[in-house]
Amino acid sequence: MRKLLVATKNRGKAKEIKELIGDFFDEVLTLSDFEGNINIIEDGKTFEENALKKAKTIYDLYRLPTLADDSGLEVDALGGRPGVYSARYAGENATDEERIKKLLEELRDVPCEKRGAQFVCVLTFIDENGRVYQTKGICRGKIGFEPRGKNGFGYDPVFIPEGSTLTFAELESEEKNRISHRAKAFEKLKRILGEIYNEDISSE
Image (cartoon, rainbow, N blue to C red; front, side):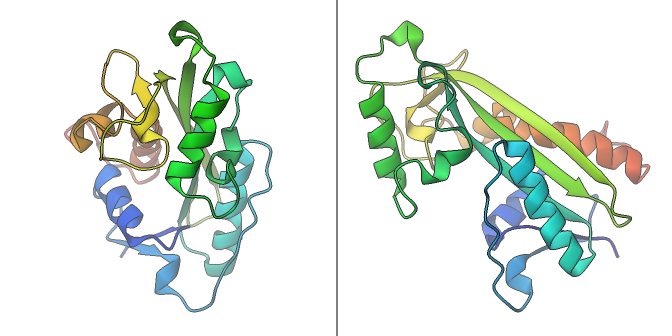
């Protein structure tokens, strides 16, 4: 029975990951399935460093195939900020609304044509033999002038992906999951898993 441990306590995220990577694993576990409280300090300077630290910490503890992700928003006019600090941009315990408010305030004098941005997702997968694989997905777009939409989370209400006039929070989840940074990272990971486990993903 092939198990995957996702470095999160969020069962919803585990369910989403199970759907995204197909049938490579019989069971997807989270940290909520184990006793104890693990607090991993995300002090890396890149998404790659943070995702690797999370994955290695959990793999070393439980020795199960492990998946961790780190993602965030990079805004051109802000020199790539908030980047790896996306979740802590307005303080450790800030709400999504507070983070969006701070972002829009920093961009209040920036015209539409200079509001380019991208969402980035880095996945780190460690297999049962301790081999490490990383994939990266990027979704380009721009930052709107006000929050719109009720779907999604984080900065979704102000991020308008290229080729759309709607924010991530206005898109149907199926459409967002087709074009998002996370979806692109998972597509690459699925190809790696297909090679590792000798499974054909062409029909998925």
